[in-house]
View 1 (cartoon, one colour):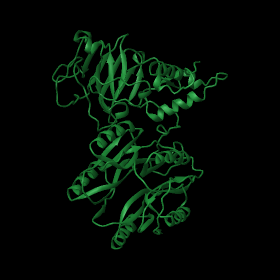
View 2: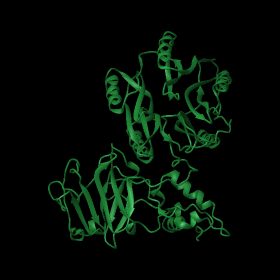
View 3: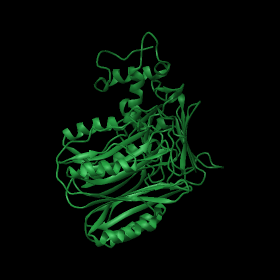
View 4: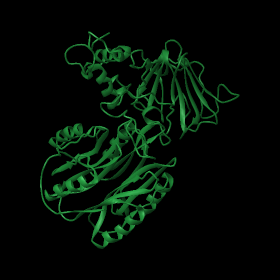
Length: 508
């Protein structure tokens, strides 16, 4: 179905309209900007088209559409900005209808500015499309797996095209990418899936080098939410907000607009536990600012004893780690009696370690280049014994197949890259006095993360929710199960980050 949008002009703030769709979460990219910026409330198709008529008559233009199913009804939400000229919305439609529409729209001087993919219950692919005036070549690729899509992107970029929008979906056990390429210039990158903290760290590097985030997609891999980014030359700050309900998103957006920011791309998803369509990821709520505490990652186990191990057998693509409970900070919060591991770290600092052994079947102390096994770390001097031995890589917030390991001395001799031997394990004996400390990455001499910095904003918000429910007349068991120790330690060691304004945190 086509919906024509009529030219007009308006300057306004973010829409304050809302509906009862608490199962949906909104997140967005924010850059400095001016003009109107409205995200329409989730509506069924007919109401969305009618809402589009109203907004268009006020001088707004649709640039992004998102869709999800709630309680059996497909809902639509759009991002609107000040503008003029033609603006068409098509869909849902199948691949053949989309191809025909692209030919017709090109003859009308229009180009795609956004597309959305979803699957019907029979697995059939459906598209939504948003059109604006434009010129030049445009190519919308069919769905393909990552390696093929990245190779296709390199070829199209060499031909003078630039990726402006990407959709990532899971279908029949495969992760599929579809991309919209148009004539353009300047730098253009797509980054492979990364957890939020690693994605934000990469964002900071790209922004510093003159790139801005123009599109983001969420996909669930290895049991956690990960993000794919499209980047182009530009000065935008590329702030990426946490998922919020529509009402909370509107409140947040009003504040962002007051600070001079505008959103040009948004994402919509279902909260954990809500009905979803077949083949869509079932995202958890671990990054919702009011969500529950997340589970520890499946690739990390907490064990007894005093040995930290890293098993490079790569079960399901990830190294398996075992952390000795006795050597973790005793003030870490607990979730249902289990230590809640930090989720914002990508590196470790191990203080007062006794020994380091690289091991393979038949050899418990591999010393062949570049591996260095050390029977007594203290003999290496205080820099390594008291300062700690350090490494980082695809662990914690950076878990995934695209992050390299960092093993400086004394783990390895100088080597350009790290490649474990088949069935290799790293065993680090910590002893009774050893300490496991967490870092942002494996760079030597980097600062240890503060108690607050150990956890992502969403996890810390969930901890705060539990703190705020504390009632001294009827203590919350979740708070008294170790979360109180965490907040007491945080406020004692970093008072400036203490979330309690009127005294020390309550104790049980």
